Image 1 (cartoon, one colour):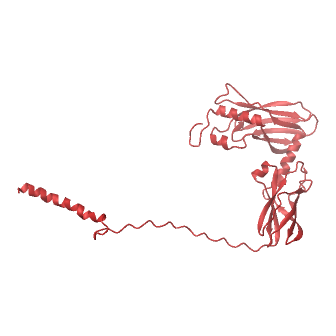
Image 2: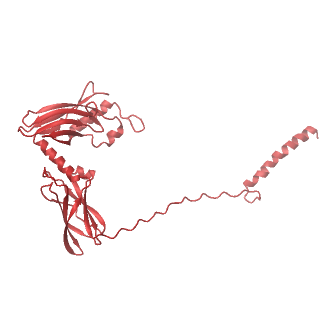
Image 3: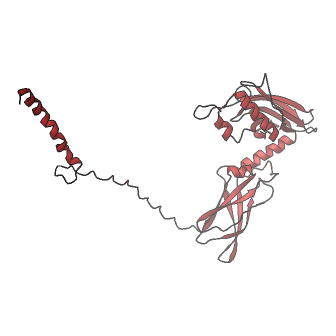
Length: 318
């Protein structure tokens, strides 16, 4: 064998030995095999800490007032009764008393209240509150049965959110406005130019005075919503003074889209509502004047046309 062939063979032998040296990885019985990989450890979860036990009942009933958005839309609020006694009770009559409402208001949806639980009872807002009253709180009388015995308690009612004050003041404001004029929106919503992208729209405020002299109504400004903005900056400075003996009038109010994204159009349930800032005989207030069904459709149709397209959250067009 020639010297050159011997050199090539010597170089090849270490390479041939490599598979044998590495083969133990595939053979679990090989003494050269490495340690088996351990399975993934299970994830640990935290053990919930038990809540502290409730304190013993005080033996009293506790009441407060709440109003959800659904309650507000249905012109009602709820008196919640907390039964902080050691026995379940069965209310048979729940009546709210408040000087700001001329007469007592009876609650509905009566049902059992377990021990140390609370339940809400619905009360319809009165059409005619007692305007001008200065009361700051009310009471509730609860007639109930406990262990077969009929009982009755009258307890104070907390109203941290000022629900009753808001209801009474807003209703009294509307009644004050109604003594001067009836306000509404016309059905038509027009646009300048061809009504396309970038167009300015116009809604029309209808003012129909009662025909009788009396209080003076001043409309200071009109505020917009997430879809429609009156005026140049979302607020239209109306500067109108109205008395009951004036003739009817139509007031054009310029509008433009507030936003041009699909989320605003899809999620805004208040697009038909406009806040009207007023003074009635010098007393300030704000009330909501809503578009009628036809005007609402026309207003949204205008806004979409003026936007040209609606952007999505991801930046696409719709």
